[in-house]
Length: 92
Image (cartoon, rainbow, N blue to C red; front, side, top):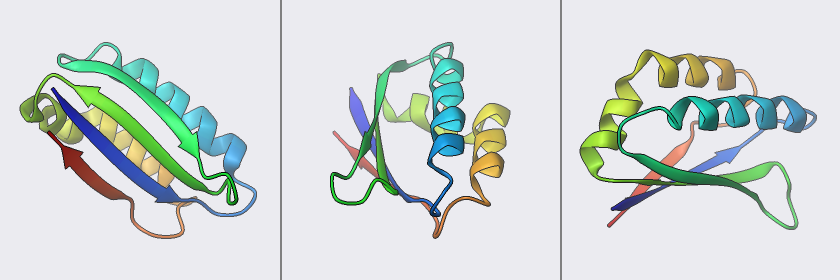
């Protein structure tokens, strides 16, 4: 199993939209081979600093998801509400 940590800084006033997009992403990922679970966390002092933690069976499953049309669509939806590119870290 691997854990994928995605850190995002979102624009002020876009939190509701962000939550909607990520909730939809989690629903989509739930049907993808290798996805185990995921959760969304918000920094206590800055709710616009967000972390998504997902668990995957292996790195190949994660990479397949990254290249999928669904994930690309999600990234496109997030593009205009992120202050900077997301930071992705993979842990074994």
